[in-house]
Image 1 (cartoon, rainbow, N blue to C red):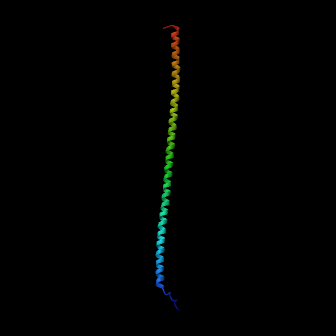
Image 2 (cartoon, rainbow, N blue to C red; image 1 turned 30 degrees about the vertical axis):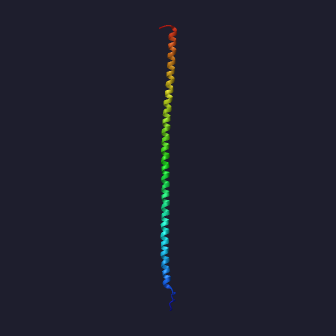
Image 3 (cartoon, helix red, strand yellow; image 1 turned 90 degrees about the vertical axis):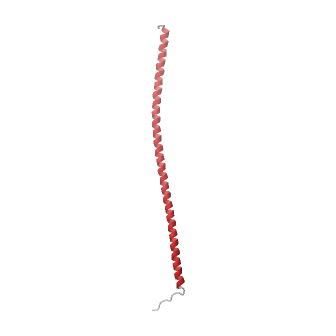
Length: 111
């Protein structure tokens, strides 16, 4: 059996293979780092969006609670106003009755 003859420039071929392999390793390393950066950026963006949504939900809840409190306060103030108006009406009627009674008393001539 005869061995096949090796190419004349085996040393250059080996150097080219080594150089190619190193180049491939660098390219792979760079693309992995780039992918990692992009992945982290996407992850941070998602987390930021999630935090913003949570913040908005919290603000909405607080605004709704404030609206409910203000509605209750308005209802209480409306009741107080109605009671005060009723008291004013009662006092007006009493005052009107007094003035009529005073007129009747002065017209009769009895002191």
